[in-house]
Length: 80
Image 1 (cartoon, rainbow, N blue to C red):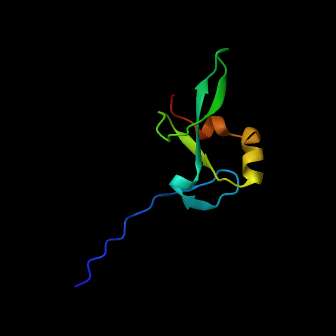
Image 2 (tube, rainbow, N blue to C red):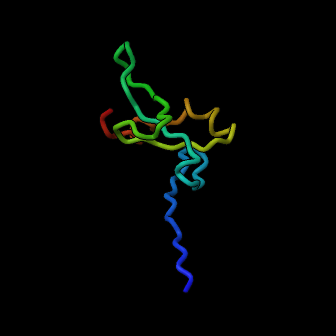
């Protein structure tokens, strides 16, 4: 009897191009407060920072548009 187990691979959507990718192949971003007290976006390289984050794929087009993502304040509703 063949008992191969297929491990579930979580997927997430790039907020720019709206395509789905395996979570580990995307870049995660979360909001936070900078030294001047203004809300800003931080890259979450370890994908473990608290708060609601959003994901962006590795395409050059999407990476260039990350700073211009409108509504990231809404996408990051959680406190960080």
